[in-house]
Amino acid sequence: MKKVIGLLLGIFLFFGVIFFFGGTEILTVLLSVNPYYFGGAVLVQIIIILLYALRLRLIVSEQGYKIGFGRILKILSAGMAINQLTPVVKAAGEPVKMHYLSKSGMPVTKAGAATVVEISSDLISFYVILFLSILLLSFEKYLSQNFLYAGGMVFILFIAVIIISFKFMLNEDKLERFFGRFLMKYFKKDAKVSTKVFTSSLRHLFTCRKLGFKIFSISFLCRFLDIARIYLLFEALHFSSPLTFALVLWVITFMFSMIPWLPGGLGLVEGGAIPVLMLLGISASVSSSLILLERFLTFWFIILIGGVSFHILNKEFKENYGIK
Image 1 (cartoon, rainbow, N blue to C red):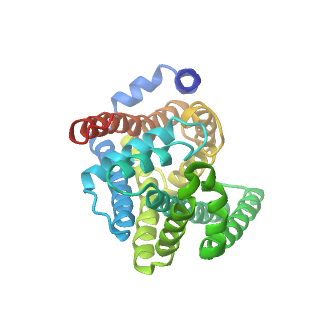
Image 2 (cartoon, rainbow, N blue to C red):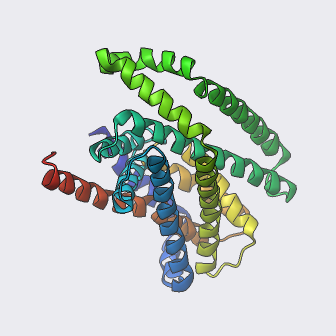
Image 3 (cartoon, rainbow, N blue to C red):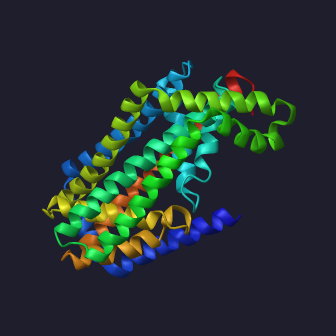
């Protein structure tokens, strides 16, 4: 019930913020959208989702499990939709993916290891590109030096956490003892076996250089495609902007979306991003229209395909395996 109320409140704030800044002029701007550029942005978003599915399939295959790309795509979409509906990023979508992977014949411990590796590649690519973007925007005078210092400190802290985490996760004995205590509550007598499988799988995935190159290449490519999608939306609204504008919007939306708030950061992202775009000299109606289209692709579109995926997955498991 709380999730439903939060989503409804978020929707109210979303449209409230959009129309507060853009008013009825938004409709005029949206009716003039270039269909080719907007179609290109939609295509880029679809490619990003397909690349995410490919990344997950590579991780699953490395562990010796052959799950069809179509099934992986549906599992990924379902997980992404749940992530959008939870205030804290990655709070519920990952267990959903683990659940459906385990139903597809993959042990939950190995599905958990695959999820950890997937999240790690995502976080590293996000923060590296975020720092480089802040660095570039600071030198181009789009962001203040104070913003650069703050971003630099956060990036250094993140790198330190990543190094410590990797050292810990590559030490199988420490990792096994840690998860042994955690898993004991849930697996009881099977905890030792489950912990051993999880830690050995995690260590194998992290030390496989060939897999690492592939999944990190995909993750970084998706970050660049994120920025390309925003640039295409600028063009779709007949606003020829420098690439730095797309970078600014990507940085702002990412940072606001990381703040625990209503589902998907509804209201918060819009309220933070639109004023920033207006400071760059973009009219309120164009800024609001741009955010409306961007959020459609990165929030509503994800929820739509995720909801369809949920329905199809549940139907498949019920019909083929008798699982409700």
